[in-house]
Length: 142
Figure (cartoon, rainbow, N blue to C red):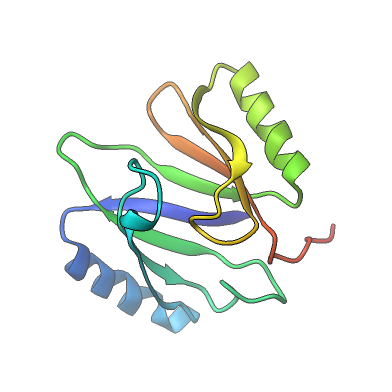
């Protein structure tokens, strides 16, 4: 399951209005902002929209986070749900063994939320994956 996607845009306000309006019929809503000053230097300001389940405790939800595009920037940032911290570790190890580029070893990232455990890798073209376990998410069955 996809947990979250970062989309780099040239105009935050215009894009946020677009995503909020386009996804409203599907039960998505604005989530607010994440201010970069709360985290590490390389984490940008983020502006989110999420589905009805996002942030709840009964189901794992999905979100889209808009960030200001930098000159020359391209690529995708995709967060993948993991059911355990060990699954995060395993996915990170597999990605690194497959030639991935380390963008952040498995660790707690409590500047995002309590119990947020993640690892980050990039592929050969600069697309990024985040393997993430959020302690508040229910474990998926099946």
